[in-house]
Length: 327
Image (cartoon, rainbow, N blue to C red; front, side):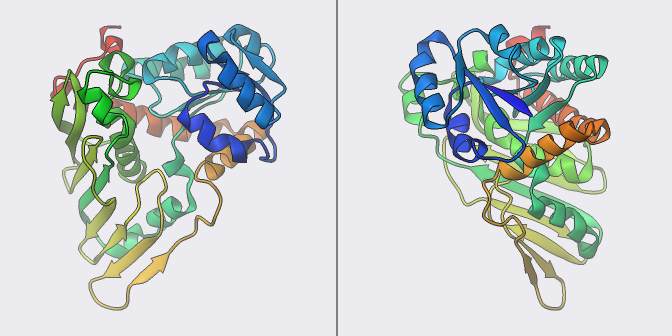
């Protein structure tokens, strides 16, 4: 994979130390805005990335795959431009600002015969696969609870009137799109798309700073809580008639899982190992693209599209509108 990265933000800085030495990946370039060119140059020098760009089209000519790590409202436009140029795309979560944008991206990927993956770490982690394997042991699922709440380092500035993209409705920010997206993907990846989704949000300055999303699966109910204005221990519980599964880490890390049967000893599993949380997804992306495994890509894309539909329905139920909703 000859990879170009668009963006120099926190997520890129988090995975570059590992990605720079990852097998099967040739880091070709890093693209930034002119304002961030100096930061890009420093990062490129540190991780031996041969080229930096401020012209996205120029980087696209030099790579076969692009990783898009820019604010949410820009995902669709940059992904579409790359795919129109015949490039594979890995896009940060959430895939797009709206379900309509996500569908447009998927249609483009299919028509061009390129790969489109959402960088949703949860879906690729070994512990998540283990949860799917353990589900039959808890019997008939009745309730699912997810809580990913962390006090944002940017919340105080937000309250003072300084709006970062993660809190900006113009950038498709908010707790739902930043944190609860992991919870929604966690649930939808295991159980599919719900019959109904509703969102009760705490809204400040036109954006949700925290909220509770409920999903109706008819035979069971799921609750997804996320907050950027307050903190709480991460807690994921899947309750069934024969026992329950418990995780005490956020879905983006998907840490150890414990099976608590109604009777008998509990069992604990932790299969993730010591690799960074992004390792499993990138290993899958490299393997799929190298093998031309469009079937895997299509399955993962279907999950991403279902998640995008849930997020859009949830936002609308809470009265949260983005510019992408006008398209």
